[in-house]
Image (cartoon, rainbow, N blue to C red; front, side):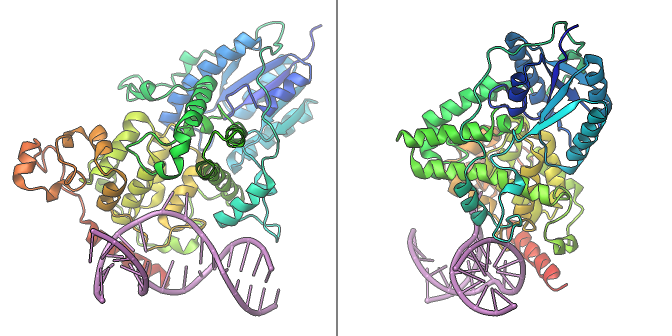
Length: 480
DNA sequence: TTTTGAGTTGTTCGA
DNA sequence: GTCGAACAACTCAAA
């Protein structure tokens, strides 16, 4: 009679190091069976770009786990059924997982927990995704924060829940006999025809090793330029850790503690490091908002925004998605998203502001596109950030803050290098006109090989007019 | 309970 | 070209 195993149910925590659930399972002394379940009907499961990432991340994790001695089991189907079946089939004595924070997921986890416990299987859950649980960071009144700055001060004071990340594991004792598993190829998570992800692998190395390499290169260089450089899409001054974080290939604690170490050793600029840590705190803040406002992905936090005169603009939305709005910084951003599955944060704000405030398209439609096309799509970050730009979120931008796509381009992509990379049809345009091609003299356009309306669109909307219209919309909801 | 100070990321206009 | 003010009012958090 072999010893009854411990299952580790992996979700968005596709790593071995600093994985509390996996760690506890091994500590239990039972043979460990890590499992990932693909359930297409799970609420807010994953968009297409994230599935591409998932494929490669699972491949990497599968290899690492197999090497360690506990091969990854893949199962597809309805989550509750699949988990219960696997627990019975393997005669598991316990199941371990790291917690999730969205109702649809919490409900699933609870259902599985009670089903398993009814059958005498122990269940243990952990915090593997956040520095602090959402309910741990409280105001003086005991409630959740709704303003970022005091939240950040509180989190900074509190610090992470655990002092140091859990170490990696070379050996993880697995089951005596193999457990039936799907193959990744069966799941067809990557696009085939057309292969829109063809260029993704040039930008990314999914998996725990890729995540650690990215962290190291950030710490070795860009972090010291982060405070000011993070706003420059034409430079490599950001971490690009977001997709790794979104899939849990690295934990926020690992990042936090690596940065604190560098600062302590005097190897990282303190101001830049602090700014970067506060960005991690924004992720925590967003998870708190989601946890305490479960309709965050659908409904405006400030309810009066339900009455905002949004427009139904299928044509505008299409132009925005394709990067054909006639505003180079917007178009470059949308095409960077399509080509690489990622967009620089400054440009996310510019493109989102354009969709919401220039086109008056409901922010939920932008959120949906980002969710589908970003490799770092994250339900809490996405919902909170779109609401923030729309002005209906927590601690949101004031209504009159409407980004001017030309000014923003000139300020943050002064030479136009970013535009030239992602909108190559504008490549030959001098910097002076690159953010507003329609202002270029005829001969400049001609020598640059640009025919407006043919090789590159005229602006689909006049920004000055659009700005007035958006402000008038806010008057509407203020007076209701 | 009341008061007070503060609040990620902007733009435009006029002096 | 540069600079400061206006763009609103409200809600949050803490004293």
